[in-house]
Image: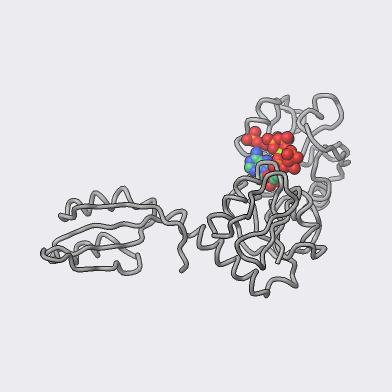
Length: 281
Ligand SMILES: Nc1ncnc2c1ncn2[C@@H]1O[C@H](COP(=O)(O)OP(=O)(O)OP(=O)(O)O)[C@@H](O)[C@H]1O
Ligand SMILES: O=P(O)(O)OC[C@H]1O[C@H](OP(=O)(O)OP(=O)(O)O)[C@H](O)[C@@H]1O
Ligand SMILES: [Mg+2]
């Protein structure tokens, strides 16, 4: 099975990191290569531009790919969205100069919009019933309203810094995007593809959990169970030669701060919190 992975840009490093954490180590690294074998002899990584990855998957050159939802939508290909990989979060928005001439999408009727995402933009304005001309550019979109090339733009924003620096203001959201694992519809039931989904899911599930270990007098065990609500019952082991038991549990990362305080109040000691690499539920 081939998996298409962004070869550069901001999605490259986190994609490689995800593959590594999922246990699919790349043989010989990913630098400047077109493809790489992985520890699994049946899985090869292909490196391509994020914008081209939907095409690779649609063509069957790769069974699955890692790229932004914005790129998948812009490609127009009908791919199966297998998993939200929870990075590369950004929004495609309509933005116009801060001077306030264009305040709503309707104000763009008869106007011009510059974008790197012509398909998404045309579809958006058509849905809104607004007749705007779409001008395709391949970068520096934020400049175009200031040189009378366009009245507004449709572009990616995440922190909002680029829009602000370029004196543009958001007037509507077109799409909320994040990086997805996408598949060719015919590849969805492929066993390797399913194994990959499980491996990625286990990395994502582990990210916001922590493994908690502690010792506590056995007669306080019910209190410990009260403090660790909703988590699959903790594992309890005798500590040889003492009245203590050792308790191991998986806890939501958000809850760790409070849980530790509560456990100390109960009389727990030797509390240890560690990261989890993968969690198969
Ligand atoms: N500021 C951002 N914050 C979060 N995600 C982003 C941001 N900009 C882009 N992305 C996501 O990353 C994807 C690829 O963007 P990136 O800039 O890495 O590619 P690129 O512009 O094609 O690369 P390059 O500019 O190196 O050719 C976008 O399609 C989008 O999904
Ligand atoms: O809201 P912000 O946090 O400022 O992010 C938005 C910017 O990020 C992306 O550009 P990128 O940094 O990828 O540069 P590029 O134009 O060279 O692709 C995007 O095209 C915006 O310009
Ligand atoms: Mg970019």
